Length: 144
Length: 170
Image (cartoon, each protein chain N blue to C red):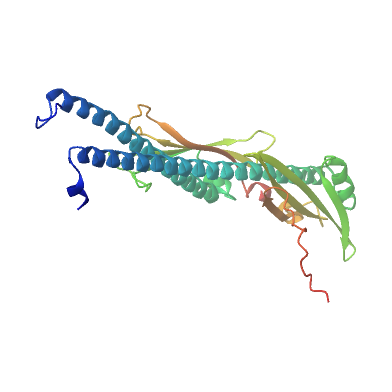
């Protein structure tokens, strides 16, 4: 701006608005990255919690309850069980497999927690949050 | 007033906006740092739990293995007097065992420690089993073999003895 003149020229306003826009985009993207990280951490904590409770529920189980080979549990955005399709955001897939013919009293339980909707600014759907393989003992096996 | 002492106020908006931007950048960076450390902590917790269940699974395999051996002995021999001798011959070299007597009845203690490296530190599971002599070949295996210790711990737990602590002796 030349001395003595009041106000800004259009070029000055455009340049300053451009600089502000670039800086603002940078700042907003940092906040979004932070939000996504917190969301991922929360999802991981919740998935671990839910999977742990499932494993402990199956520990020391009897063969009659593990006749099922697969199961799927649906959760809403607050990690509460849901059957409403529009609310479903997370799924836990469970898969029971006999360990081997020599180890009939042991079962392998494979658990996988998946987020169905993508995280903000990520395209990937069905994001695997956590997975674990555990061995479950069939307590009734030795009593037979 | 300070502003009154300035010759011109044309730069004040520039200073205010710069301060605002710097503040926003600082907060954004702090937010990113905190959230990424939160994610790391959650990941570490998840890995710890995974290691725990991995060791627990190994322990279960070991317990199953011992019970299978006991079943095998009971299936092939009805001589319960030779039970511990037969069991001893079936056990792996790495398996620590000892036979003791309670009221002149022999019982065997079998133990194994499993180690796993997780996040550059070792985690252990110690499984200790008590095998009692069966009265007959129809005895339940869960009654013959029982778990007396199933303990997890991290790095070798060492007491720091460099401090001259009073041990309660005069």
